[in-house]
Length: 274
DNA sequence: AACGATCCCTGTTGGC
DNA sequence: TGCCAACAGGGATCGT
Image 1 (cartoon, chains in turn brown, red, orange):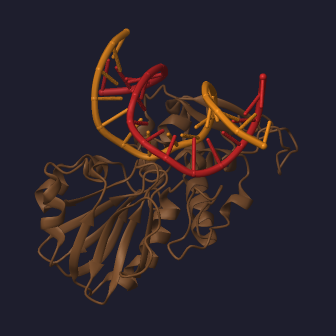
Image 2 (cartoon, rainbow, N blue to C red):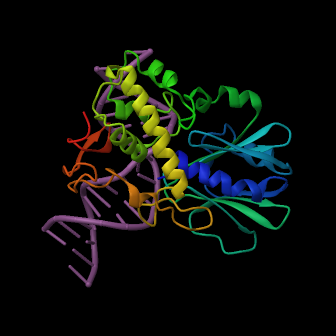
Image 3 (tube, rainbow, N blue to C red):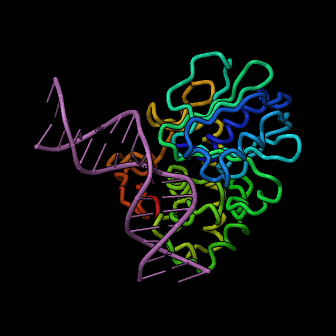
């Protein structure tokens, strides 16, 4: 499942292969990929012929900056993958967007479950889009950012961590992992965390995301995230709680528990987390 | 406004 | 062995 570390790994892979190249041809073969764009033709018309001048990321959103102040936005959803290969090579199944470049390569967006999307936005649209109302990027958010957004909130801290308007970039896996590292129960009301606990949580978020990034992301099975070059990230071997229901906690030996919270599986250790 | 439920989608898994 | 329901989840949307 692509969360912030997987998206950032994708950006770092894509950047040197894309920046400086010019888009020569664009094919979109699945209309659902463009559901964020008012008119589907806007995407193709807006990016074709433009030179790529940079890449960026905020939370789980990947940005490809084009000359003329157009931003090509990609969201990987839960099964999206970006790869770069020779444009005349074999195309993987479930490839819905192909962007050919002037050096004979193509950027391919592959997404079996089609929860991801692409769009091309003008500066005004980018200011207006939902994702800019997101909270600060989880890699750089500080204690004040988090504490200020939790004041008065009664929902479970796990649910709030996954809310992109609080902090941007955390999904189900890293939320569970960060809460275990911070020794906080996922069911604690967000507003009940004191300053010390908020500090512990922010540090745990940074540490967990950094570890995921250093490992090249999380891969749970062959449907899940792969690095753009096809290699699997190995963070899944270091998960403390996610997917470990019934197995002993690496810290205290207590069996890891699992429950469904807001329709998402939640894993925690009763011995470590309060 | 805040919160939680529901839905979208398809490869994989587990039960019978 | 084979079939099929259940499961996985990011985020939009809707009801409370």
